[in-house]
Length: 336
Image 1 (spheres, rainbow, N blue to C red):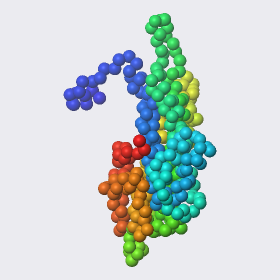
Image 2 (spheres, rainbow, N blue to C red):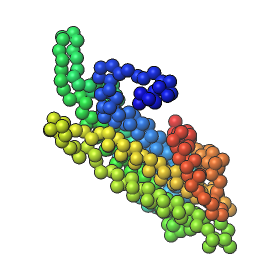
Image 3 (cartoon, helix red, strand yellow):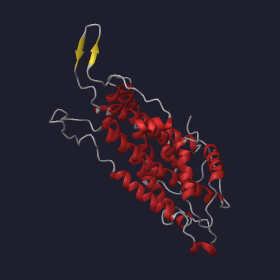
Image 4 (cartoon, rainbow, N blue to C red):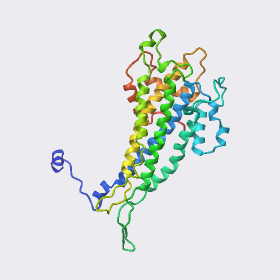
């Protein structure tokens, strides 16, 4: 390191007492990762709600599943909020087309109940993270006024470990929800009149095109990996240092797991968003097509700038990566 400093002309950082330990302390690392994970999960909640609204249109779903009176009977606040966002996205108070069915499949009908668990949990997860972020986790703690040196265990990151183990479970459920919606979209047995695999090819070219088939296969794999990573890390404490460090939080592994589950779920969201947009476009080609609700029309128009309809098969990896970049940037303004 000294040789590299000399070569680059850098002035080495001289650490003061306890700073080396602070740089390596897992409690600081896990808390920093938790802050990043929280922000990503919060945006993902909004995005998954918007994707669900697009899929209600693409699958000709029943918007009455999100009626305010229904949710007054089971008033979890986050669940009610997601239903309200869906009503706004779908302009549910406006005249609707005749209903095709009383009950949609669970991945549409129960979307507020799945996403609502994440919405309700984010508040207490934020409390855990903020208290940890604004706390001392060093050891010992010095009481200068009383001239006391207090040895304790504030380095233990149990609250962050539990928060991240919980968050990865919540986020993986979002991946599973969107994966199920995509599976309905591409299957002509369940998508209520859309072409197989959402292909936009003309009838004479249909047999030569696969549309979103490969995207759905990839999405299923990403979802499976996300679900596999939900095993809680905090219960796998190991004893070290001759049993001095005999019970540890494992919070950094939990936070890393949460980040990985978020990465995978964002990939699922990108794929399902592009497929939902394709489904909405296909519905719009029908002679009896109804105008999209304002929020969804604006989103559809915005997406069209970067992601044109898939008519003839083309490589979609670049567009999926661009969509992931847009998600990372929190590019789309969703639910003020």
